[in-house]
Image 1 (cartoon, rainbow over the protein chains, first blue to last red):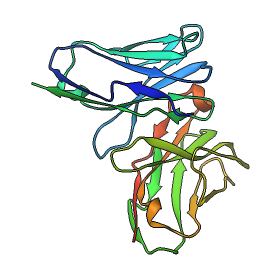
Image 2 (cartoon, rainbow over the protein chains, first blue to last red):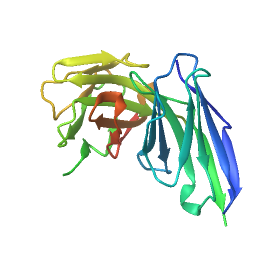
Image 3 (cartoon, each protein chain N blue to C red):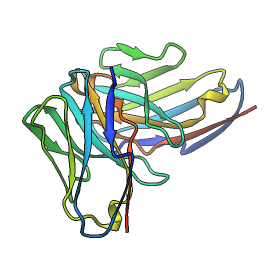
Image 4 (cartoon, chains in turn blue, yellow):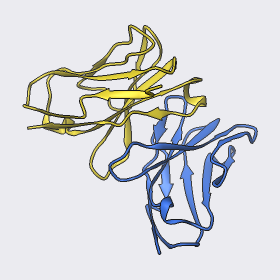
Length: 106
Length: 113
């Protein structure tokens, strides 16, 4: 079943922070995060694994709560380049969430 | 390395026609998958493969066939195109299955009239 993301859309000024949430109705053992800019393919940001291991982007942080079946992506001091649509994905066959559109303005 | 390549980049079909979308990767990845993305929507998994000779269905497999005869190639066949299959199709591959970073191809934009 498709993970649910919130909020659906976020508008920020440069330098502001944002949190994007991902919830699943099934047990999670890892969560992926990707960003997609308009007209382009999705690009890998991060994987969070059971037990706390993280692999990915140095400037983006995330949390993974296995018991609550949730993950959150933290974007701090946002830059114009952060604009795009963010997707979480849950294995085993990677199913992507509903997406969160983030727009950062000067 | 070329990474993940997809051909064609654009395609227009008439209802009822069949065609094959090509996907190839040169990273020796065992795991490959196909997604479709409708305008303004998210990515939906069509089919995936964990290795040569092994394929499985994703969320929206109806109307599509796949096969995996080599590690490098994972073609997607549309059997009888319908307007509802108008979409952008992305192929992805990874090392380590879904424990690893997914590398996406540039996509094929398909329009069915």
